[in-house]
Length: 214
Image (cartoon, rainbow, N blue to C red; front, side):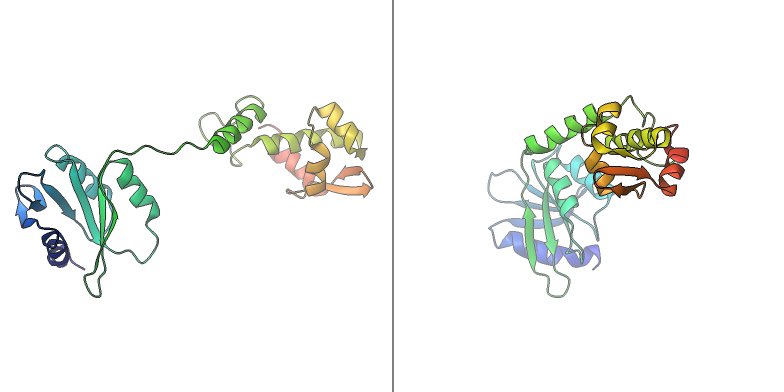
């Protein structure tokens, strides 16, 4: 769809609600009036873009009722709709094959819902990290997580002491989940020698060489 193809269905949608609608009024693509109410402004674009959001935000100096209208995306546009909500903008999708108009969001104040679970996880990840290994961004190998730091501590112990019981590794490395980390073996660094006893694999020694300095 071209921008001009979006105008007729958007105009018809607003007129059905009792608005008088005109296109290209000043800097606005669409302006709709209904009595003495605040005008509705719609910015038309063939897809979501930073320029579209910039234009719509500029129209908020004139009215709080600002929408962006785009052809209905083939792929999910959940994040773009969420961004529009955060900016206080409404979102209109126009279906290309028949011009059907679907209002995905109305303009209005946005208050993000806080997640105590996510906040607690973030603080756990913060506390688990030793030092600040990712200062300035990712390291040369990627992001260093608290889990990887714990795995490295286990690998260093095994490199020095050889195959050891998980409880011993946990005590000496101060990694309470050492046994689980070695048993899960996400990085391929550990091998089970016998029940409760783990050793270091060739991949584990390579991992120490690659990540040991991080």
